[in-house]
Image 1 (cartoon, one colour):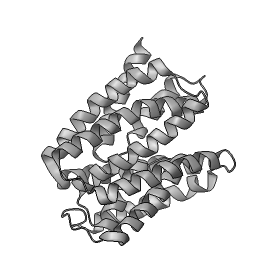
Image 2 (cartoon, helix red, strand yellow):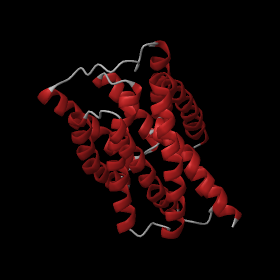
Image 3 (tube, one colour):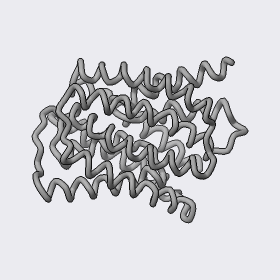
Image 4 (cartoon, one colour):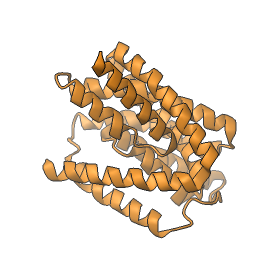
Length: 253
């Protein structure tokens, strides 16, 4: 019983962090792997997706109701991500993602340095693309992130946040809203894959989903209340933690 309580608590905090800057998997997945060591990794990943997709969906819905979402960018990116997440999931069955495990810490280090150095990064919402160019860039972003999420996955939400700001001129709040919409698409695609292959713990996933939604609602409200400056600070902390974890994983394998 205590294990279920801990997993519910982990899902709550994962939902809260994920709703703002992504990176909830840093909390939720280690808890599952630690408390259910005899369960197949694919089943734990599928169960985590089952919990996370509801929290991410709740965050996306809340953002859509409270702020102006750039649907011209978010929607094509989400559709592209959904399709390419399947491709990524298929590819990982054919090609081990070991090389990404080694490269990921360097990518995160670059993200952290860039964000830290650019003090005005993500403070103002100034879209830089319109029309076909916006659509094309959104499709490319969604395809790349969707494939990455299906193939490997760590830091997907944080990378989305960074890319929407860097290449589309969003502020942190607007980028967080768009990132959640694309993240939902990635999670749904992955969840379908895990469901078809039978890698789900349904009852545990539903319990964690309820907790994830509760955390997501609180996280979204904090983001809406404190805005882009606060999100930027939390984003940097999450990227640093991701950097430490992925760096340790790369060295220890």
